[in-house]
Every structure is written in C-alpha cells, then in structure tokens.
Length: 227
Ligand SMILES: Nc1ncnc2c1ncn2[C@@H]1O[C@H](COP(=O)(O)OP(=O)(O)OP(=O)(O)O)[C@@H](O)[C@H]1O
Image (cartoon, rainbow, N blue to C red; front, side, top):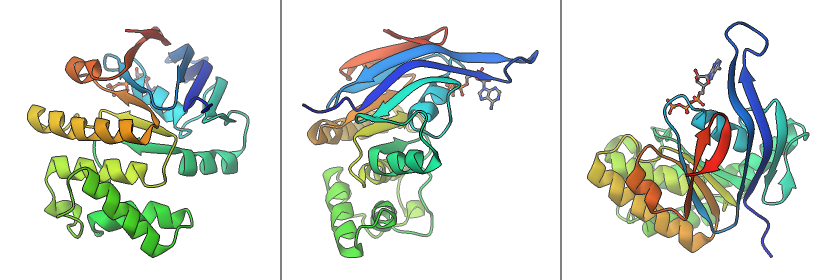
C-alpha cells in the first residue's frame, strides 16, 4: 500500500516566542493526506495557512511536532535530509509563479529535473509531456513574459510536478487570476493531479474551488479541523 503523501502530528509554531509580540500560529495542527487525495485548506487571512504550508514543505521549521513526507520522517533530520525530501518528494506552487524570466516554458520545467540529476534530453521530453497535458504544447519556447497569467501558472504547475513529487503543496495557486481563468487553470491542474495520483494540499480563499476537492480542512485556533 502507498504511504500517505503527508502526515503532520502535533505541529506547534509561534513567532517571537516569549516576547510581548508573540504570535502563536499553530497549536497542535495534525493532518494526514493519502496518496491520490486532493485536500483543500480554507483559512481567513492571517490564520496561518502560509506558515503551515511552509512547515509541511520543509521550508520553515516547526517548534514541535512530526512531519512525514511519503513515509519518510523529516522532523529531526538535518538540512541535507530536508533538502533531499523537498527536492525529490515535494512540489510547490505559489500565488505568483516565480518562473525564471530568461528561460522558456520548457526550460523552466526541465531545469529542476536536471538539478536533480536527470539528463537534458529526458528532462525536456518530460517537460514537453507535462506542458502538453495542460494545453501548452504550442507555447514550449515562450518565455514567461510572452505568456498570459493563466499560462504562466500552468507552467509553474508543470514545474512543481517535474520531479514526480509525492506531495503537491499550493498556496492560492490561481489567486491572482480572473475568476474565469482561475476556474479553467484550476480544472486543468486538478485533472493532472488526479491522473498522477499524488497527494495535494491546496490553500484557497475560494469556496467554489474548495468544493471540487476531496475534502477541506480549515485552521481553527492553530489546529486543522474538517470544514
Ligand atoms: N516572520 C514572522 N514574524 C512574526 N510574525 C509572523 C511571521 N510570519 C507570519 N507571522 C504572523 O503569523 C500569522 C500567520 O501568518 P501566515 O502568513 O501563515 O498567514 P496566512 O493564513 O497565510 O495569511 P494570508 O492568507 O493573509 O497570506 C500572522 O498573524 C502573521 O502576522
């Protein structure tokens, strides 16, 4: 049986602990996302959504708690373990695409694979396949500045999947797009996510998008509860 894509147990996080301006953001947050499961994360601004995604994505450390990515414990491991798990196990998409402006769509998707040791030809072939699956087969050689906002987000999505992660983390991935484009881009992402069978945690303020996911969590006083 497949290991869960993500397990979080007892995650605690406070900023400025012990000081007058202490902010307790996570207070025993726990979740389990199975392989193939798409889970939404709904939370009002400031509730700790980005903090939670950064901790799950091993970009930020928790004060306490356990994190497992596809069965591998990340908590307690050193920076090298965290970097390897992040590179091989996790794909990220942010609200703004953060694509490299001087590289083409194909190169933006191929580069993370090459950084992980893949040969250039195979990396380009996988990039072309992924980009084709979200309808960008005619935009392979375009640079980000030559693409629409929705196209840029689709490239960012393909880049997140480039190294075949077990877990996809997304922070408002269509949040900067107009409603129609957001809807289309989100549908394309969801279709590919469901085909690949990876586990996904997708933060959104959009209740309609959240309803298309398998289930939805919300942050309530630093804990994750079913929405
Ligand atoms: N580096 C930091 N130092 C101090 N406080 C911080 C820091 N980062 C975040 N916070 C505080 O922690 C809380 C949670 O922040 P976070 O960015 O996780 O919220 P969010 O739910 O993602 O909000 P949004 O939807 O507005 O992006 C906020 O009250 C924020 O002010």
